[in-house]
Structure formats: C-alpha cells, structure tokens
Amino acid sequence: MNRFFLLAFIWGWSYLFIKVAVDGMTPTAVAGLRVALGAAVLLAVLRSRGVRLPTEPAMWRHFAVVALFGSVLPFTMLAWGEQRITSALTAVLNASTPLFTALAAALYLGTKLRRIQAVGLMVGMAGVAVAAGVGGSDLANSSFSGSMASVLAGACYGISFAYMRRHLVDIPPLVAAAGQLVAATIVLAPFALATSAVNGIDLSPTRTLAIVLLGTLGTGLAYVLNYRVVAELGPTRASLVTYVIPVVAVAVGVVVLGEPFELRLLAGGVLIVAGIAAVHERLPGRRPRLPGSIPAGLTGSGGAVALVMVALVLGGCSGGGGDRDADPDDDDIEVSATSGTNPSPRDPQTSSTSCGDVQEEPLDPAYLQHVLPGAPEPTYQSDPPTSGPHQPGRTFSGELTDPISRPVQVGILEGGGVLVQHRSPLAPAEVAALAALDERVVIAPNPGLVDEIVATAWLAKQSCTAVDLDALGVFVADRAGAGPGTDG
Image (cartoon, rainbow, N blue to C red; front, side, top):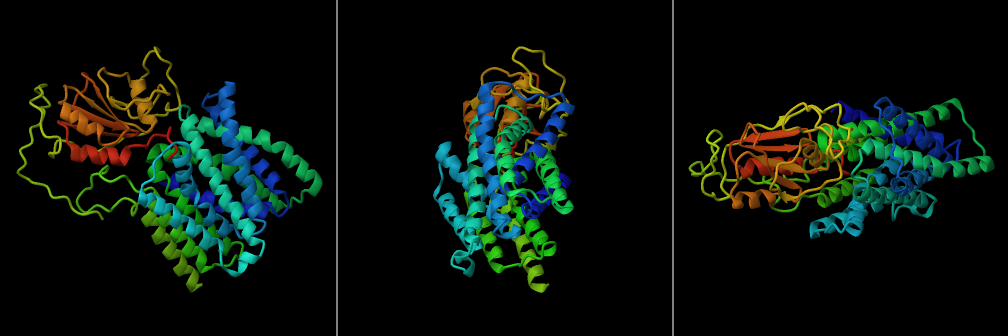
C-alpha cells in the first residue's frame, strides 16, 4: 500500500508540475520533454532487468497508436488546458477517464453496458459538466475551452486503454509503457522543436525543476510504480489511485499555488465518482457476498473517495449487501482429500466449509520473463505458481481436459484469469457451476496436486477439499482480472 499512496501523491503533484512548466514552455514542449524523460527512466529499468523492446513492425504500429491517444494528445491537451484553468479543476475533470474507458470498451471491444452502467455514464458526464462550470460565470470565458481540453484528454486515455486491451495484452505492461513513451517521444519531438523555435522557451530554475520532476517522477517512476501496484493489488484495487489523484491535486493547488477552492469541484467530483461506481458495478449474480459485506461500488474506489472528498470540503470550508442465510444442517457430499474418489454428482448450489483461507503470495522477481513453447519449465516459488516466468498469448475459458504446464498456468493468471485445478475428476454439474462464476475461470485437471482443489489467481491461492461454490465464488469475484496483463 505504500507504493499505492506514493503513486497517488506523485500523480497528484504532476498537475502542479504541468502548471508551473507550461508558463515558460509551449504545451507540446512540455509534453515532449515529459515523455522523453519518462522513456529514459523506463529504458533504464528495462536495461537493468535485461529486457529489450520488441522489434516487430506490427508491434511498433500498436505502440504508435497507443502513444498518440495515451501520451501525445492527452499530455499536450492537459498542458494547453492548464494555461486556461486551474490545476485542481484539470485533475477533477481528468478523473472522468474511467467513464470514457467504459464507453470506449463498449464501442470498440463490444462490451455490453447494462442499464445501470448507461445511467452511470450519464451521471458521470453530468459531474464533468458541473465541475467544469457549465452554466456558471466562467462558461463565457476561455476556461470552457481549457475544461474541454482536460475532458478530451480523458477521452483519449479511454481510447488508448481499449486499444491496449485488444492489441497489447500479450506483452509485459512495463515493456508496453516503454514502447509507448519512446514512440510518443518520436512523434512529439518535431512539434516541440517547431513550437519552441517560434514561441521561445523561458526556463527558470523552478520551471526546469518542474519539467524534470514531471518527466522522471510523474511519468517514468510513476509508470514503474503503477505496474508494481497493479501486480501486487490487482487492477481493481489499483484503480482507486485514479480517484485519489484529484484529492491530492486539489489540495496541492490550493495550498501551494493559492488556487481557489470551489464547491462545484466537490459536487462535480462526487457525481463523477458516483457515475464511475455505477459503470464498474459487477454483473448481478456474479459475486457471492459474505454476510455483512458491502455492495460492490461502495467499496474501494467509490466509498473511499466519497469519504476523502467530504473530508476535503470540510477542510476547505474551515480554512451492503444483505446477509446470506446458510443452513448449518446442509448435507453436502464432499470429495475426500485422501480417498481420491469422486462420489455421485452433488448439487452445485449447496455450500460447504471445505476451503481454507486465501493465501497471499509474494511477487516472483522473474515475472517479466517469457517462456517459449517447448522450453524447459523454470523453477517457481510455489506449486501451483501464482506468478513468475510465463507463456503469454494463450487464452482459455471453461473446462480443459488435459493438465497444463506451469508457464501456461501463470500466463492465464497474468492475463487476469482464475485457474481452478482438481486432482480427481469433477462431476459435470460442478464443472458447469465453476465455469458459470466468471468467463475468466479456467478449470483443468492436475493429478500432482497435494490438495483436492486449488484455485489460483495472480499472487493468490486457495486450497479446498471439495468444490465450495461460496468460497470459490468470492475468490473468483475478488481476483478475476487481477493480472498485470489486464488494463485494470
């Protein structure tokens, strides 16, 4: 969690760095130096790990598209916008990025939006309008164009995330980020040089420090931290940083730059968070809840940010789910962990207490290494592994009839899948019930297991003596999509 808060702190300060740097540089120069310094940091990290950027022309075409929508356009628009609006407002408006990501996924990837998610998009967009001052006194001034630049930057981020989800999930995110920044540097360089030649550069010591920190910390180090946070916490928990950033940026803008704190920032921010919570609400029936649990959408990003924003406005002004009944007398038939036999099929809806606690496992330092098909299996920290060298690019869903190698297992987890392996054959009803938990669940035999059932996800494992749909359902709901190969 220390990396998480450090990442939010760095990215929150980045809006201040942009505000300071753009006073003496053109927006394209700010964006160009930012990506160049960030690329230098990431290339140094990759070099230290012995990792090289890919050389395939097709991969660099993908890098170019992601660079355009993920760096060139949004970084330039943010800098251009901050010439016209405050850094605090820019951060709040840019927090709408997850809304545009959901919209882009629906249009580009064919992801279906339910009614609540469509309503969430509209609520979030209304929050953007409120925060931007639509209908306020600043609408008639140049701040409207600056606000729209910040919103369009969020839209560009959404497009880039959807594109990455389709084309760049088979390579380590750190490599993809480095390729993106290198491509962005190449694209931005001529524009940065041309605009600087025409308009000049006025680099005071403060502005120089701001652009150096923006590039090395706000872009380079932040990308490294973000990858580690996603790897350790999973993209769902890591996405909370997107909503904490505006809190840091608003506080920094008010305290350091003396920017005014306006209640419409709070009102718009709350609407944006409410819209994001609705858009990212889990599909009904997919997540079994524990007694007394808080409904999805009120935990993590939604609830925490709402509380933080309330605390923020108080400072500015002064200076779940229902319980699930369980029948203790249920006569579940369980697979014996020692007999190795499988009794007659049991009702997949019954519950049991046959699963142990979820084990959190450390990140394997070799998690960036790829294993070619047919190559010898490397050594792993645990068996079955939850991270480490892997074979990327292979996706599975549902039941597999043959055991799979450990590099393929980790490749499934790296892509956000949950692997449920069984030592003895399962009844068809059990396989169907497990597959119905989530489309990312893969069920496969593994005669070498010590336990009867072992569920693995990225950096997490749960062992069971029988199929326990309640426990495994919670494990799947919490861990599906947690691999670093997902967009989060």
